[in-house]
Image (tube, rainbow, N blue to C red; front, side, top):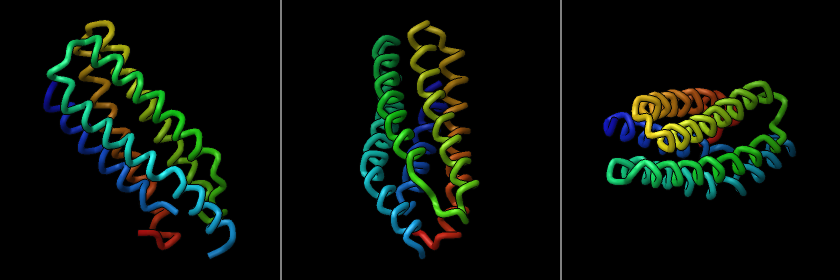
Length: 152
């Protein structure tokens, strides 16, 4: 279980780093500006998720559950801000993949919280594996947008 959590943390940090590069036309400029306003929050949340994943083996189930529920709520608010952005038409369909993957990551954080609250280590492990997969999917979703818009 510890190994799965550590792997998930690395993936989440990679996802947040990939999203952080996200930012042509006025639509593109507006999109970049809107994204940049959320970027710092996303970076902080990604780091907090990674920190919690590394701390979780040292905590009891109630602490893990409370921490992941808090992180899920925090990330969910940031995903709502991402969903409110209006991407340029050239990447609009791909942006839906990004927000969908980010929503799945939120669900995975909630699943970890629920499984820990139920003292179900198997379900916690499955949710952590799903979190890692969702983080990878999010990275894959954002990369074409970064390339198409010439973002770093």
